[in-house]
Length: 414
Ligand code: AMP
Image (cartoon, rainbow, N blue to C red; front, side):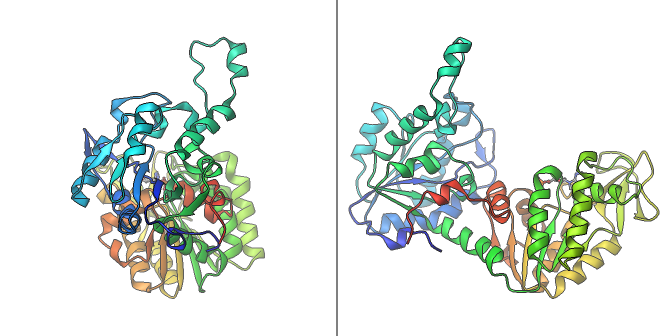
């Protein structure tokens, strides 16, 4: 990696401000998945062991630029304190005089956590325009507000560390702009690991390189599909992604999820695959349902038979599972983003589970994109068979698309 990491700098006696991605899912104040906290622990422990004082900052949810107890990081500071068996003080805010005083007071080995950075509109480069006239709102200096917030955050510490891969595709005050005002800005160990796996797949994959794209966010994933078609040996398109392709090819898809306006892009991707000699696989059969429910009536139909008008495809069928598993069997690198069907419902999870099993059996370097693919892999019980499970859905997609991640670009070069 060409960016400096915490391992490249002197930390003893320093004050470190670290951006983490503690945007954990919760239900009625209870964290339902603490993967993101666990993923940040190696860097947190490393920094403390080196004798530095640690100030953590993160966003949580979408509080829309206003302090809102519903989005407080208290549940995370409490949990982190339990895990580390040490006090983690939560500041009342992430900026302001009271927080600055707490930050000034953190001693080596201690942890202060700042409150949700998105309690301020400036974090995301927005300005609250409530109560302003149209003219005033237009004049509001968005950039200056974001810069001021970033400068204030940077003033708390000697070193800025970014370990929030999941937020690295955003140019926010606490992710990228803060680095502008920090003398030293380096990557954390999680960030380094994410970039190592994803970067390896993009720049120098061991071949055969197989990409698997599924899920339902069709428009959000066609760009990465286009990029991967150029880079991989085989690309498998399944789940809700496949029906736009099937319809563009003239097959009947019933009520299945699709986007008509993307059919041209789908055809272009098919043509690109041919031109690049990339093996592009689409499902050859589907498990279809007569209702949007786990208890719907179901049938298996081939793509040639097509899906009747009132039915929709909610999983790939058994022949597709075989076809895809066969293509994955000899892979040396696999990148996977998006389930093969509505895996949340047991009756439509077989396709996704079959792919999980095939990836696990292949022994390949397997990289699982964030979001629902991670839940799917966890649900299948095969998570420990994967080489790398990314903590960032959007960020991992943008990285694979070849986009510059502002939260990485802002860090010091080696
Ligand atoms: P994404 O965020 O794009 O990875 O999409 C994940 C979601 O896609 C999951 O909630 C799945 O239930 C959903 N999904 C997968 N296949 C289908 C399908 N055939 N029809 C509708 N939704 C699907």
